[in-house]
Image (cartoon, rainbow, N blue to C red):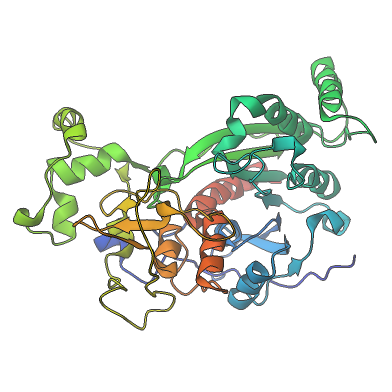
Length: 420
């Protein structure tokens, strides 16, 4: 397959057009803008989906050379918003990556259903398991750095051996599984290669971490596994960026200083009482004066300037009321003054109860597409194409833009320091 490389415009990307400094805390993305003199680095991304990871990576200064996604609606979304990006609609298993050898960064979020806590979690036996082709892309591209994002369920005990297998394949991508060789037999060969210690082929040093997007300024409690692999010839140390936000700082601003309510113009008589479950924790926080981190961002922070679409119709794009929201066991919605629960794709693109807002009076409604996009830290001018359920599916599968940007910016700095 011959794939055309097209130029990409690297733009300054902000979360939205609102004043995040004054109303929601600092939410600007780290970026290397076109007007700044810098060496644009290259990237390839697989399983692009709605584009959250791609936006974060490009805003960090990487120039996308190729993006591969099989879903037509997701490809239309990317093409509509970034018409200069080289997006290819294809099954990744049919794509050769050899023309992209030497790219700085390879990234992707292989389909997570095989390992998802909410799915059938068949793991390595699931035909949707695309980790083998992610490893093949590493082998063919030989990138300097690899970023892989996946669900928390990947760390489940039942998948522990297979997760170790994934990491060893990343470390030794040229030690290929033989025809008719079971994965555990391949794992044994990789373990022998690893413990022998004299391997001379392509190698990567791998680290992984379970991160909560809320700890990095995303208004959403979203736990994801991020794996980073650094090519072994790059002799520079690296570690995951430190969290920038915390629950403790949010509770401090809400229940100790009251700054949170002041910022949102909530009168004293209208402020809620401290929840019973937080009383002891807040009393301990009263003894502290400063926090090195910013407060967690909340649903209110993300959507404070949007009208309620059920009662105040507006011309805000993608901000329409969708009826039918209800609470049922395990699906209780997101409180206004906490980070949202994880935005999910749901079965067949229909999101579950987590994609609901719980109003102060206890009533619920679905988040609009625009509200969900803000919770995933997409910029306001980024449009999700397709039906409501399709747009929500793209958002539910996406990496929060801000989280992607923070990790990619750290990798960009790492590559600068290695002069690689």
